[in-house]
Length: 90
Length: 349
Image 1 (cartoon, rainbow over the protein chains, first blue to last red):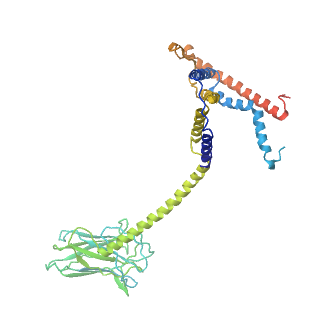
Image 2 (cartoon, one colour):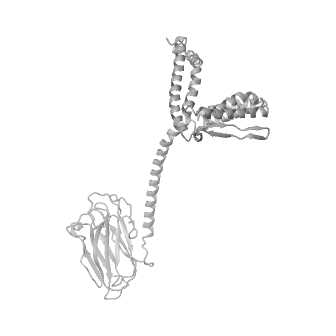
Image 3 (cartoon, chains in turn orange, red):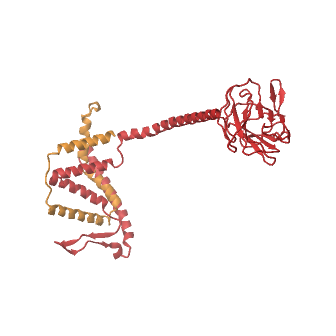
C-alpha cells in the first residue's frame, strides 16, 4: 500500500508537471520504418538463436550491459555511500 | 391416572419441569437441584393388540459422575373414561438403555424387566426398593439413558400424554407425573410453558454457540489476514509495477512525442529480443513490397527441413559450445572490469 501510494503519487506528479507539454510525433513514414527495423531485429534474434541458446543470450545480455558500465555503477554506488557520514568513506 | 415417581436422596425440587416430547434429544446439563421431565403422547388408542412404546431420550450431556437414577414407583390408574371393567393396562417391559440404545446392565439383569401386571382398575409397580428416604433400584448406570416401556391395554382408550420426570441422584427430584388427556393423538406434545422454556434454553445455547464461533472466527480471520495486510502495506500486488510502467511510458509517449521515440525504440528493441520466437530452427525473411505490391511475402526458411531434421542435433551441440564461450567471455569481461576498478587498469598481471 505504501509503495503503491508512492508510485501513484509519482505518476500523478509527473502527469501534473507534464501537463503543458504536448510535442508532436515523428511522421508516419519514419515510425513505420522503425517498426520495420524492429521486425528485422526480431528476425535477427531468430538467426542468432540458431547458434546461441536463447536462454543464455537473454541472461547474459543484461549482465554484459551492466558489466560494460561497471565503472559508472561503481562510481554511483560510492557516491551514494560517501553521502552517509557514519560510514566514514572519503 | 398414570403417574411415575422418581425419588432420590435429595430434597424435592419444586421447580417447573422442562417437558419435551418423546424421542426428542436434549442437551441439558443438569446442575444440582435441577431436573427435567419428559412427556409422551401415545400415538394410538390403546387396544389389546396395540403397543405404545414410551421412549424417553435423555440428555446426552448429563455429566454428573456417579449419579444414580432411581425409577421408584409407577402408579398407573386407569383413565376415567375407560369404563369397562375388563380394561387392563400393563407394563410388559421396562428397560433402560444408554445413548446408543444398548440396554443398561444392573444387578446382572439386562435389561431390567418388570413383571407383567394387569389390572382392571389401578396397578402399581414398585420398580425399586425403599431404603430410608430413597427407593433404589438395583442398578447404577451412567447417563444418558433411555426409558422404554411398553403398555398394553385390553380395550381402546383415549389418547394420553404422560408426564415424566427423570430424577438424578443429588440433582433431580421427585416429580409426580400426571396423565393428561389430549385431543390430538399422534403428535408428541408438551406443556406450552415448559416447551417454551426448552425452546428458550435451546435458543440461548445456539446463540451462545454462535457467539463463541463468531469470536473464534473473528480471531482466526484477524490473525489470518493480519500478516497478509501487513505484507500488502509494503509489497504491491502482482502486476502493479508492470501496469505502472506501462502507464508512465504511455504518458511520456503522449507528452514528448518525437523526443520519446529513441527511448521507445530501445524499449521495443529489448522487448523484441526477449519475445522473439526461437522455438524453430528457421531463418526469417521479412516481407518485401513496393508500395502496395508484395514482391516477396514474409517467410521462414527452416533449416531442419533443408537438412532432413539433422540440424536440431547439430544445434544442440552448437548451443553447448557457444554456452561455454559466452560464459567464459562474460567472466573475462567481469575480471577486466573488476581489475579496472580495483587496480585502476585492465592489466591482468
